[in-house]
Length: 253
Ligand SMILES: [Zn+2]
Image 1 (cartoon, rainbow, N blue to C red):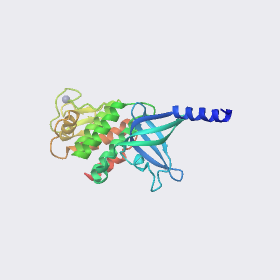
Image 2 (cartoon, helix red, strand yellow):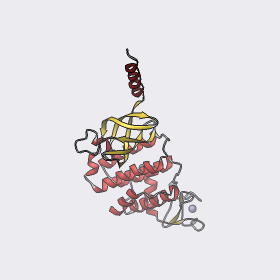
Image 3 (cartoon, rainbow, N blue to C red):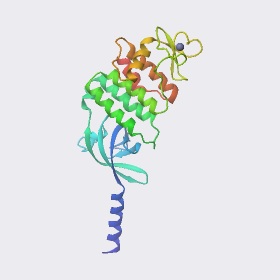
Image 4 (cartoon, protein in one colour):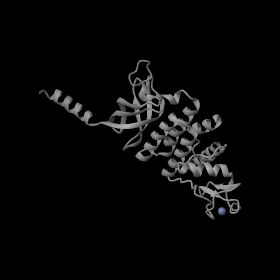
């Protein structure tokens, strides 16, 4: 075999070795160069990674689906010098019904947004990935507010920003009437203990968060909207990032 050909074969073999397969959820896609997109993927066993999807903005592109919001697929990636390129993808679930209902769309966007903002690059979290995919399924199937509140509580908990929903931080009692919420301590105070710390918080906010954390049926009323407003502000206080999709969802409900 001529030296050149051998060298070529070696190169091909090396490139093949650098091909990786992983189940991943598409969190975000930004236009890149003329026809490409830069994808932020939440990959099993890897965490958040950036991958180029070439030619995907052309109308007939075979991999268009792989750059769509909420695409959950097995991505085949070529890795070279720490950079990933999408080679192919096999769809597990496209969650297409999320694009037919604006409420469901923004609730689902709030899920992928929270993953993107809470997960630092390079840190893997298969539990969070699983929770995100399950939540997208729940949003497709039913009441999106409940699914979203439960997911945000669990995502914040996994990121180290646990929000306590068992009872008053001071005396342990359940909230009755008006109480307070402490952003610093991530929990509620009942009316009797509220004097020292926190912003006013209602019983209905507490009741929704308490039920959602336990996956129990939510109480009726406007508690979901109030709970999401509190979660949005808590998210900002802890991460310094505005959750734009979550804000949009709150405006819609
Ligand atoms: Zn108390």
